[in-house]
Length: 122
Image: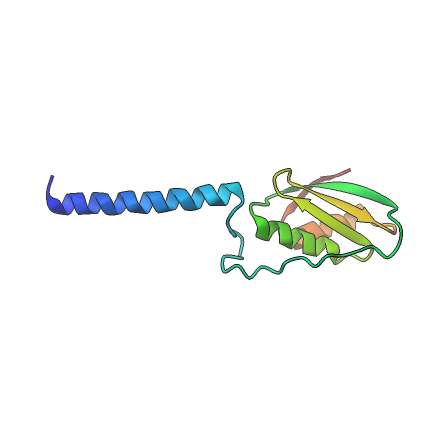
């Protein structure tokens, strides 16, 4: 093998190591993969309901990959009056508590607005 071939091979190996580490972080949910790469994603503010909790619903969500995704869904759902959301990345769900009548359509629209797919609401 020529010295130039060895150098090229080493460069390819180093590039593959960096790519593998980045991919591993992405799939574990440790990286900001969805537009928040600079770390500037808007963290959800702690929200409280005005009245007593009337009920909860669980929303199955497709397409979340990282904390930035969780923050986007949480913020979108929390924009609905009378709703407080907690989103679980690993389970791919949002648990929504509400203190007034909330339609499934409003919840679906909020998830869609955040850029994700609502699979079901129960």
